[in-house]
Structures are given as structure tokens and as C-alpha cells.
Image (tube, rainbow, N blue to C red; front, side, top):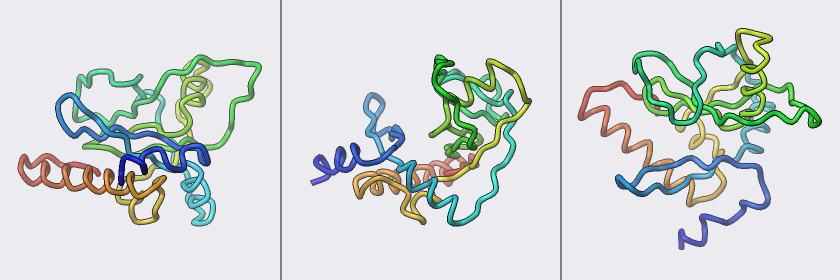
Length: 165
């Protein structure tokens, strides 16, 4: 049942595939619906926050100081013939103080490359936000997000490490 759900609706929406580890060597992907998030933010009149550019790290770089807040992004080569959007980026709070850019990697790459500002405008969401407002792509993704949320709750309870889900 869920094997069919994984790819359902992927061609109809803009989405982000969030890796959900299920073993040491295997991840599944939960799909976050970017279109739904943008509509939700607009309807709820969310206010973006300014996020310092020095907090951004490329991909899965090792974290030298785990107590510092990091936002990971995918470095994108800038094609200046295509326009750069000027809307706030979307960030997902993950485990601890680690965050992931789920929409706006080109804008982050451009801002860091040009260093025009010390900050970039962003909307920040958490996995509970995604679940509460149904901002995932399908039921398959919902189950995986619930699994990830429960995993980090158990981890926090067992090891006493504060986690943002």
C-alpha cells in the first residue's frame, strides 16, 4: 500500500524529500509539500525572520560546535540569466539546533556569494507544524514524519538531549 503512495502526487506539486533514517544504511523519504506551505504561510499571515548567513553550512558538513545553530543548504550554481526569487526561504527545524533549507537554496547560494546582506529572510517550520497543518505530500509521508517525530521524542527522553522535532 505505502509503496504506491511514495510516488503518488509527486508530479503535481513542488515538494522537498526529507530523509528519514530507518537503519544505519537505509533512508526513506517523507515528502513535504512546498506549495501547501506557501499557501498556509500566506493565509496565516506568517512573518518571516532574518536568519544570519554565517549560520548556513553546505549539505551535511560535520558540525564542529554542536551547541551552535546551523542551517544546512544545497549549494546551487547561479545562472544569472534566470531570475532569483525575492521571497523568503523555507527552513525546517530538525534535531537539536540543526535546520534544513527546504525551499530557497538558490537564494541562499546567491546571498552568500554576493554577501549583500548579513541575513536572509526565512519562514521556519517544525515537523509538528507540518503534521498539524497537513503540509506533507501524501499519507505515506505523514506516517514517516510521525515516525521521525516519535523517534526523536524517545531519543530525547532516553539521552536527555533537547530536540526540536
